[in-house]
Length: 486
Image (cartoon, rainbow, N blue to C red):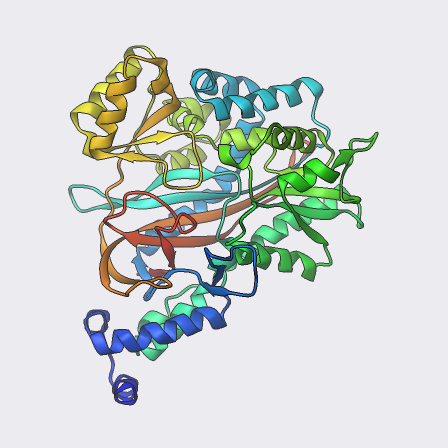
């Protein structure tokens, strides 16, 4: 039967709709797709053995790429260098960070710990004038009642922005699937994409400016390393440039890390030029006071931090909400109305829950129409947001308390679902209605007041079944995808 299927689709042109509903072909394609993912290195370690390379599987992905309008895709890429500058400007503005986070740090212990660390560094003075930012701005396509589509930002990730490595490998997987399915026209619309190389260029520039060829780049990693291959692609790009890389955990830094008299950071006897945080973005990453001591030591050091503590805080949800207020972007770009317009065009409604009349209005709005909003705590890593009736349950408990200021409210973006198959290890492949999220990677390096590197370095598309409200690939909900431009 497989031979017949293969022959039939090698001589006949097919449409996407025909292919989606041909069960025999789908069964054949999913086997080819899984092998293609493995051949192209779209890999994750298993839940059972997250720290062993002996058993790996393919990272979850869509069987077919998802259609994305080229106009909004181009818009997302073009605005990224402006977002890079915005994050960097916010990170340098102490009064804005303090004003923005004043209410949050009273009720959110994790943000308060980060902020106290930031204040300590501010008082002591920064050791290192080089700043490296590797971030990812995430969007959905919002459909308005009149049928128009617009690009709306969900958030910007300024720490441990993931999947730049695996996203560099997925275009060839989808090209192969489309070729076998004889969707040849679609195959020509899959873009090349190599965020791993672009992120590595940013790291390499900072390493070069640090000025010591014997100093190494340290990836600060989690205890459980299922997503190690995503890191390895970036590591390998650095090794190709003869830049040495080591991987260490918080406990390794606690045990062997120290600063010399010049505040150079040493871990396991090696001088560290860059600390690249792929960990440290969630409260549970700090398992002891020693973890916080290690973070403080790294922040105090001469090593370039990616991100430094001020850039970490610039990516909080509360800062995102404050940036959306009228007139705020103009404070950062006083003579650049076009830049302001391009950034603001991507904002959706963002509302404060601070105590007072404005916050009270937000609470009333959310309780009256909970399905129109998302309630967001100050957390990264996926799976934290609150939707629908649960918004009412949370807000009823905290509406008269300052605890509500730990959250912000955002308009719920309303994307148009598309149909696709989600390919996951150990799960049956079935046709789903799906929602997609477009991420755009940015990299920048500043030395003192001079921006010496500022680029948009690639994209990421993640797709999940429309029955799931929240969560990314690492959280086990979304899968890797590619945009098919039209």
